[in-house]
Length: 465
Ligand code: SAH
Ligand code: SF4
Ligand code: F3S
Image 1 (tube, rainbow, N blue to C red):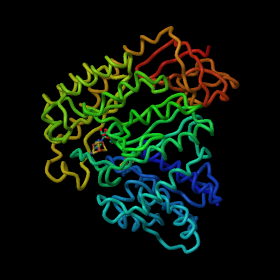
Image 2 (image 1 turned 60 degrees about the horizontal axis):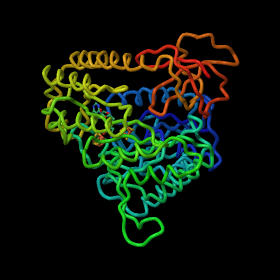
Image 3 (image 1 turned 180 degrees about the vertical axis):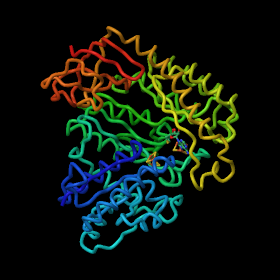
Image 4 (image 1 turned 90 degrees about the vertical axis):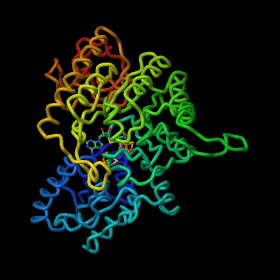
């Protein structure tokens, strides 16, 4: 039996896809290269913006078509939309399985049963904000720790979950309602998993959590009695000791002062901890930040970036912003532009506010910024950031950078004299800069040195040394 998997979401979602793929692989399924040759199609979904859900519905529309000629095809929807829409999604003609993020340990069973019984299956959490039963957490832990290398999308790299869920309740955000309460995984389980990944050749591990800098886990100290609360800094330190692991990153950070001192110090002290932070600000207007339930001001946020740069000189910082939050005026937007200019991000992700059913912003505030205004602000902010990125990137000219090679470049950026034996490759620096150069594809998963010869706002181009 062949399975085709498609992921529409964030890194958390991609990690789940990798886990599901590895579980099904172990159960004897093989991975199909395309939908055409698949017996089962699993779509891992995201609910963060309406657009993300629309893409899934259009994929399902396409699958409905395919099922007309291949009625035996099994289609499963997993992930955040599965949890959000539950049985409503199961009513869709194309859908056979709906499985929420907390139920993925059941995926092999669900798929096998559906193939045999030809009956629709639903597995989601009924009360997602309730602390999950111990049995469910244990099932997730077992599922998670079985994660092998077989499914690696990018050679040499892996995501490892530090935390599940979120308790932050930013007023616009659906994540707490689809991923449940915030919980930290036991440090021993995380470290054990990283060790195994290292044994299998993983060099870069990215620790994941919606607010990963709040990682906290009470456990006895190593080799001793008593009590200790493990922090993200402790995880970084323990993971640093693992042979084979060369780079460690973590995403996403929440800009709260109280969580940062020891983490910044760990980045400064540990050579393997990459000098990189992804720390969304969302807005530069204090009024809007308050309405978003982001518990900091633009000034405090900038203060935190200043501290990060003082403790870790040269640290690369990436951000997220949202434009068109309810009530966002031109003045609020100007404040966001001002923040972006002062923050000097390496890059930023900019999103247009999308009301999510059930969130406080959707219940209490009118989505009153017109679509064309959101679009204009999005473009304007992106232009400001691109100019900053272009200028910062120029500083790399003629410099050598260390790059972890990912593989073939997906969008061949002009063909810079690539040949069959030396196609265009893409990789990233420790600080997450994208580097494009020519070389043999066998370098995927390896570290190389590249001399930068040309730069753009998004990419560094260079030559293999
Ligand atoms: N936990 C992370 C990521 C959350 S989702 C964090 O707190 O930053 C990733 C990004 O999607 C967010 O940073 C935010 O900018 C954006 N986002 C979340 N909800 C959104 C919504 N309703 N409309 C538009 N963008 C949204
Ligand atoms: Fe959503 Fe806020 Fe949690 Fe991030 S921290 S997942 S934006 S609620
Ligand atoms: Fe990620 Fe989207 Fe879910 S951002 S956690 S896949 S709602």
